[in-house]
Image 1 (cartoon, rainbow, N blue to C red):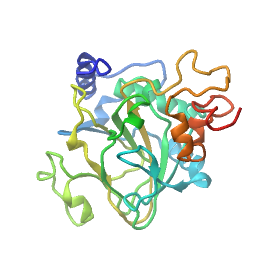
Image 2 (image 1 turned 90 degrees about the vertical axis):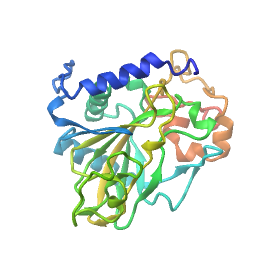
Image 3 (image 1 turned 180 degrees about the vertical axis):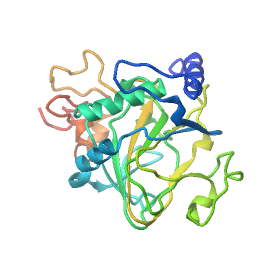
Length: 298
């Protein structure tokens, strides 16, 4: 097993996450993780639901930040890692900046406290919007290509936060979950949701699931998707968390130097990532990008 994925580290994660169901977590932020709101949904894959993880105001704030910045959602090509448009994913979305404001910072801290995974291992939060008929076919959050694995390694976990209620449809589905047969569903569930273990989107709830086993191997049972919206609309916020830091490390162009921080920057730039993913490639006023030289911004 690669030294990049130490077994004790991953074993400790599942033990701590499991303990959250019975043990409160105290942190500096006045908001604390409430274990009574967390339920275990499945062990195969490992999935947990936190009822009321976000407040109404936090949900509305995230939606308002994204409303006028949405673009067609993309998918990563399994071979090249490039971002492509596909009918597999028909939502629209945008990425916030990390620690973009006080509310976003508090949410990111809360995610780290719940998952026991460092803030720096997380990507920026992605806001997604699904309208009538829009969906995301079942897929994996871990990577099949080496390009994306170069950035912090595989995604170990996903925190999916529901920012709105959906009148019908829009469920998150795990087609290969162990609980798909035992879960009782009535006419309020969509036909799509009946094809696996499903979670209804409820405003403020957060779904945590792991894409890797405790031994750092990929978990094929973490296959998941977003069922088509039938009535209403669906807003969600996703935080993907990697096995290694996804932030810049000390000495990596933090002084605004005209440098590329990754050997694959030129490849990404040629694929149009400077325009598609400017926060990462070019950066912002407060956070220099990783591929400034290849994007010709200095």
